[in-house]
Image (tube, rainbow, N blue to C red):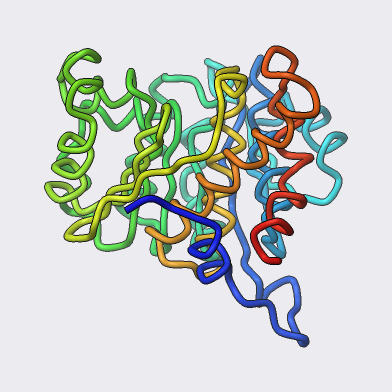
Length: 289
């Protein structure tokens, strides 16, 4: 199945006349670390642009001034830094408490692959009682504990690029690129997750469901931070109540379409992740005509 604008029109979450910030989705983003504040900014802004009513960002205190100044629309859970500049895993109890008051959780954008990150990811997989979206080092932290996914009761989305998929599966990048559809679907079926395998013609696989291929996007989006925007978009839709497969396919399509709009205006060479985020509204409007 290939996503199209009619699919997007039918899967975008409804927004009633009496909506409030709590009724249209609360999202917790556990993103960013010392030296990677930008990832927290990009994912949170994208989530807000996609319509989440309340985005709470959990950040280490070292980057709080940077992120809060860039995303004044968000609210913050500020926690002490661990030794590697991520949130100290000793505060996992506070993270889980915040997670279970939200409709969805995003973890991993701009997190460093360190013991604190690994510990927080495992805590979320075991104790977060809401859908969990794992990106970047949130995925890498899982790669040595992959069978934990089989024990998780609540829904999970993984958004790996080919390198991260290689670490998850032990397959070579060449082997994955040569058999992307089968690799994605097999992983989703085996581990009970929704998998967004990023790249040209991004694939969305869910257990027992037809594989979805995304047709939008361009080479100008091959820039650091683009994946943070996509993760924020998908997580926002999940928080708004969209089924994981629909949220992932819709997020991927609109992400690519926003990138296509940006590339047409700015060229593929000059496209930045912030340009993609800024064009999310236009991408949505084009699909809802």
